[in-house]
Image (cartoon, rainbow, N blue to C red):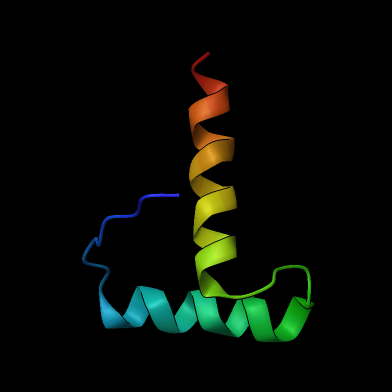
Length: 45
């Protein structure tokens, strides 16, 4: 899969990391962000 980079504020990334570490529901921060984006996109389809 081809990827691109995006800029995310450090504070937001810290929150993402905390959720990933606490919940164990996501493989890593990239997985969390990808799933969050997909969920938001599906709301508009």
